[in-house]
Image 1: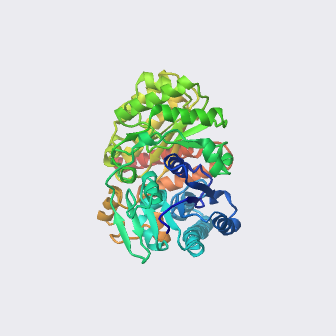
Image 2 (image 1 turned 90 degrees about the horizontal axis):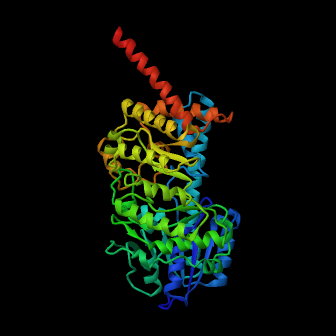
Image 3 (image 1 turned 30 degrees about the horizontal axis):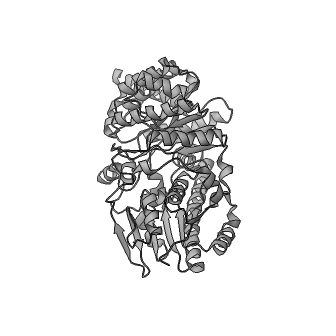
Amino acid sequence: MSSEVRSVLYVRLPCWKIYPGGVIYVADYIHKQRPQIHQHLLDLALVPPAERRRVLKQRLAAMKPDVVAFSWRNMQSFGPHPEDDALDVVMNFDHSRKLWRRIKATKNSLRIISDYVLSRLRNFGYMKLVRRQLPDARIVVGGTAVSIFGKYVADKCPNDTVVVIGEGEDAMLSIIDGCAAPAGENFCKDRAGRISHRARTETFDLRRLTAVDFAYVESIFPDFGSYLGGDIGVHTKRGCPFQCHFCLYNKIEGGNQRYREPAEIAQEVETLNKRYGVRHIWFTDAQFCSTKRSTEHVEHVLDEMLARKTTVSWSGYLRLNHLTPQIAGKMLASGMCSVDLSFTGSQEVIDTLTLGYSLEQQMEAFRMLKANGHSDQQVKLYIPLNAPGETVGTLRQTIQKIKELYALFGREHVLPFIFFIGVQPGTPVERLLIDQGYLKPDYNPLTLNPFVIKKLLYNPKPLGRLIGRAYLEAADTLEGGSEYIGRATIDIIERELEKFERIDCVAVAA
């Protein structure tokens, strides 16, 4: 690669249609630091599959970039998302009472796995295409999938590739500046194919991340307008001090929370709202508010939004333990449209998963929201059912707390999201399950074995069957349009637990 970088092509690898905020932040930052660099963003998610290679080849030929940076969002084959019915497939395969559904689930599981295999091969194929067409270009790969599976990606990438783990701003700037050792954590595969790893020794100063220059983004990303009718992601902080058993945020972003300037965040929201007509903002932090300090930061952000009279609705993952009546009022006044948070109604499960909050504090915060103006905002409960430590007793406790929230907010406003813990490499829950013999010590987290894949959506016996069949029965009720699947699932679980209780009473009496 030439020591002088004049141009960068960002290639967003195919995924479902979701705003490419991470790439946009990096490109905007590079423009502000090195305005002479020519940049372009090609979003393959918006290109028909049959046209992707041709479109990429044309862009490479026209631009001849010195650096081609790929953004890779998702890689595992068990992770349900809007275009992936993996959860339904696993539930039907394991728990359906109907043979034809289990057979159909088997076929669908093979389809999902083959789709992911082909997707991975195509993504690496795009990188190899760059190396063939532009042998001197530097290839960079980053994104969520890469941050989790960096070593695997580095093994498969072409030579002379930098695989960035976590934050991309300083890494890209150092690559553009020609540094032999790029900043941040990364794997470097040199021209001879040797791979070296650089551990993280510094973190990016988020105060340098000023409001995005969206006029510039439009100039390098012609498809920017296609995202304006949906959720637009805005970042306010990075890092997470918590040690939740199933989460990797504290490893990807570090354990120390770092903050953007509230005025810059609000300016970004205001521009999106008033210039581009954006109506909904999703704050993309690991958690929009969590610690006492981050909750104070959120209040400053809300103050800035209220002062600018933005007319957006917004949401983001929350912790409510440090909520005050004043902040609750500002959240609702500034346009919060939903309360999104992890929830279990058992302090025992909270402690087992080291989620780091008090259930009673959380319930008090719910009451505080209601007292300070909650009306029709949705309350979205992301419930890790059947997590390690779950029992019949803890499940009953969770159902009881959900019913308390129905009474507080109205049943129609409370949405229990049924999900199962996805086992991620390097997490405490992975180590626990290996120690328990649930997973083999040498298992491959990117395996294509369907029997291992479904174990990575953790829903073991004895509660797994009860929950799975409740979910399937609820899904059947959806066909008549009578109820939201999460509420229906919780109702059916409660009904089945009552049957167990009656059977236990009869057994004791006998």
